[in-house]
Amino acid sequence: MEILDEQGNSIPGYTLEDSRAQADANSVRFEPTWKNRANLAPLKGKTVSLRFVLRNARLYAFQIR
Image 1: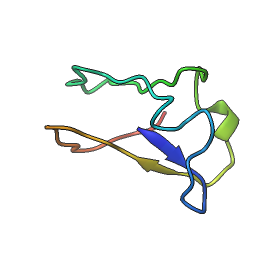
Image 2 (image 1 turned 135 degrees about the vertical axis):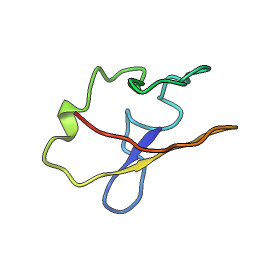
Image 3 (image 1 turned 180 degrees about the vertical axis):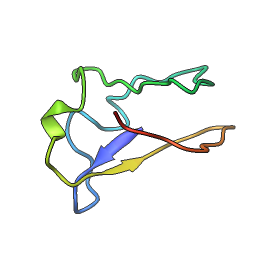
């Protein structure tokens, strides 16, 4: 998963290359992580989009807490 700004550009630190791949993310409590980012706090108050990249998988729903 990567996070994009309002123009659709990857936000540094939240790019697909920065994300930590999950070989088995078959869970309702999956928490995406990035190499140098502990959480989404730096993005609070900003308009962003999420890009999910899946291989042999389906995304039914997601929720941000």
